Image 1 (cartoon, rainbow, N blue to C red):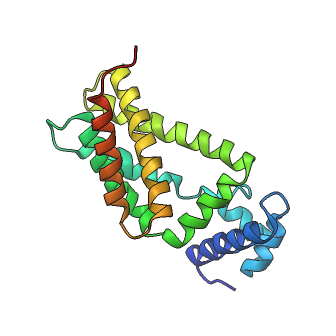
Image 2 (cartoon, rainbow, N blue to C red; image 1 turned 90 degrees about the horizontal axis):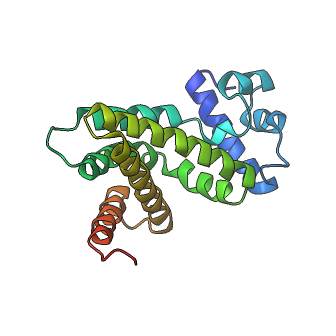
Length: 190
């Protein structure tokens, strides 16, 4: 039986990943997750409101890291440079938890209800980043565009990092943002 809340949470997440891979998300119950983790179902619900949130529990940490990095970035940086810095630093949370991040990505990709949840969470994080950029003085329209563009680059970098673990996430982020800069120099479509 896990003694600490953090240990119980970690075991619940690991049990959920295992069961989702073995039986699929839809056929796994919270009772099965709790039993696999060696806790009761009430403990499950103390840590997660539902079985989807087992995969999305780190959102608050990523949001806090992103908004703090955007807010504290040095003056004079372009919005894209601010975002690259913020995503690089917040990305460490994901990189430090690679054993969870990789299977999580695959499970979400295979489950429509989880893809929908991920889109909602991404929209919420993008709005928080746009708000942080507005607080830095970036005009609202540009802040929203930069946040969406930066988030797309971040998601691409995470996919690349999942597929190619030979480079760290920061290297994949740098490449994604370099690609954005190259695209912005292209001739606009007619």
